[in-house]
Image 1: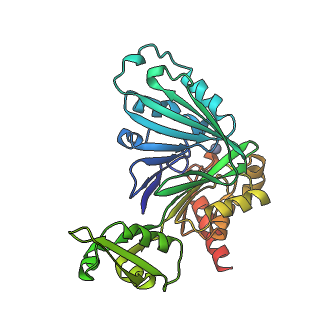
Image 2: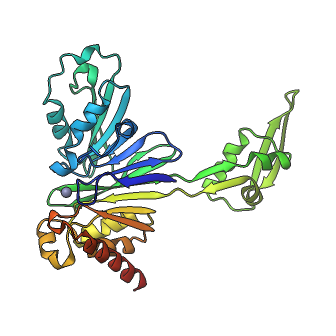
Length: 336
Ligand SMILES: [Zn+2]
């Protein structure tokens, strides 16, 4: 469960905001114009996922910096090859002689993502944002970040330069119904962790679950019940939902395959649709997609809902046509 929205009108700078219900801190997709995002929401941001550093996707860096400066905040940023130099140019554009005395320290952990390696560098306000420690690791696969409650994945797309698309997926949540435990005369305690693990490992319904507890005298007691029965009665399972953000990509076979793989089964897909299909040639020349392609892709990836954005200024006043074209393509592709 989550809250997510485009930061600007679909004709404005690209960018989306995402808050997961069960996790503190928000995600930001892209760093375009952020004037429409209230400062209190900017201060909640913990992860910023930048597709590429064309100006309309990165000009909001300064605004974010200004809002967060002087706060005890830690933000992790991720971006494509060249990202560290881009960030350092931004940070290097100002004089920082007075920040040493700030009582709070604003920290940035910036990761430059390559297909097979990641370089993370750290910067702190009180150290004038000079580059500090650096870590490099070799990676394969699409996983970018993982913690207890979510996984972020990425895909590199061709936009004449590498452009990153992102998905954020909540992990499945298992909640124990304590009132039912009481009714069944079962104790709470560490055995519930084992129960959750057995469920997550998809063990069969007849697998025994060890329930154990200590009496007041310290004697260890145990009993066994079948997993399937416990799962049905005692556990509430909430499947994690996925939000995907795709922008600035040309319509070609490799991009299509990567986009479908990343977006598959999303609850919401944000996807660029700068052009009408009658202007497909212009779209291709600029390494962008059309509304028809966006709607088709949303259908191919089996997403529940999709939101188009990044409209070209040439459709000012007639953006309904883009919405209609994308919706029709989605429906047609779903029915065919
Ligand atoms: Zn763009």
